[in-house]
Image 1 (cartoon, rainbow, N blue to C red):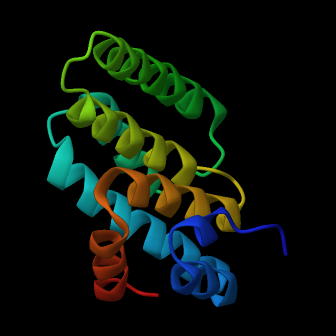
Image 2: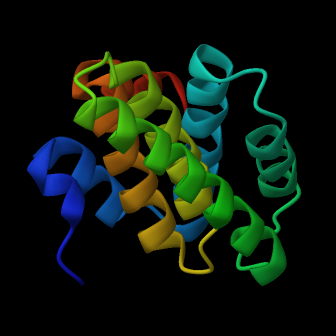
Length: 139
């Protein structure tokens, strides 16, 4: 098994993802990403479109992932610029990380999709909140 990046935030989440079957990894990635998007960036049309594709199992669809990656890059630049200007960058950081979580959830590899999506969401929203949402979902 590849090193699980989730260990940085939660050994419990990491272990649960590792032991889950691929369908469960996909289901939890979708459920937690839907919750995060609804909670933080419900009006982001690009992310909502990618989330809809995720709901339709568009894993590994390169053109969709490229579009979302460009959007994440724009969000990252906005938060980096705000940080450098010593403005409140955390709301922008959250938007970028949630969008990136959806991008990771689209990965063709279910393990990478789940671990990296949950990792991004833990960084943005806190491990406790993500853990609670995972507990409400299927893992």
